Image 1 (cartoon, rainbow, N blue to C red):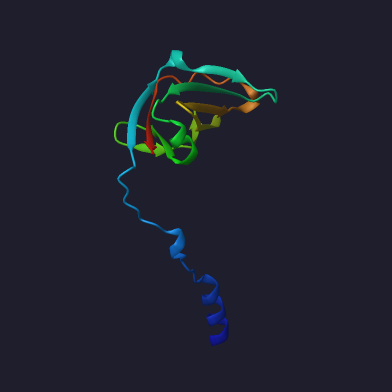
Image 2 (image 1 turned 90 degrees about the vertical axis):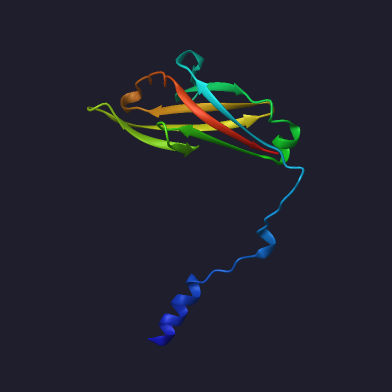
Length: 142
């Protein structure tokens, strides 16, 4: 019985490689945070070749320069009410009282901008409604 417990414990042990954990303080690190509101008229609707459809909006973010694009960090959060933020990508489970569906919100970034996507997976291939006004926080670390 002792051998069985020892073997089981050895599989649950973990080892941290200190070479991959670094806490660096650098004077050459710049960061910026932008709060962005996308309105109903800002969303574009697209249907892909495979038949899937989604809404997207392009947001200009000048802080995403070549240095950030190649080695920086971009995080995007969705404001979910007044005092809650959710990191993207995220999936929500929604209902209108009769139907149930999922909504996925995600993003891509490129030099000088971010594209935010909203994809609703509706029953029977119905066309999704425009997501309407949504607010996001984009954090850029150079």
